[in-house]
Length: 171
Image 1: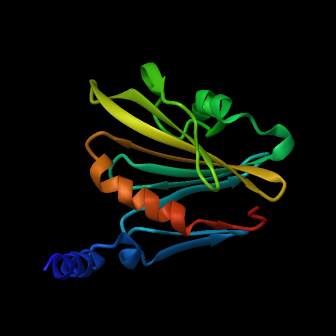
Image 2 (image 1 turned 30 degrees about the vertical axis):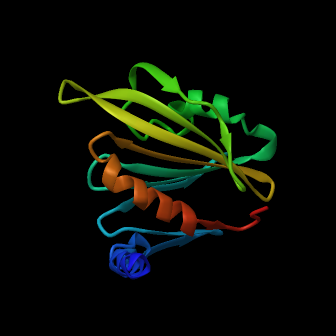
């Protein structure tokens, strides 16, 4: 009976798998990923840094930055300089940010930041996750941020975008 319940739960959850509802695929200059309906690629620029930003209809923002390896900062330095490095793609944080500890996975180092932004003159809590990995001769930095209110719906979408991310030269 327990096995039957687990199978039914697995089948039912397949209908909610966000990877099955992401018809949008972004492909440009060696980078590709899928993203949800309603989200938009709002930026793809290449200067000394390649910067791609995808925004939800609300507060969520997913970014990919490729920085030449010889110019790439550490993950901590990148996180502390993110607003400047991203070209100010979002309203700056107010007050102090709180950073967690760096953790490692198979492909990335990652770090979590909690901060506040002002929205309509009210403080709104946000969370941003930073990842650092490699792409050929460049370092790949990925960020995912959302307000506390959008976090429950954005989290799975971020995971799916990250899982679908492909780039040339991936080590």
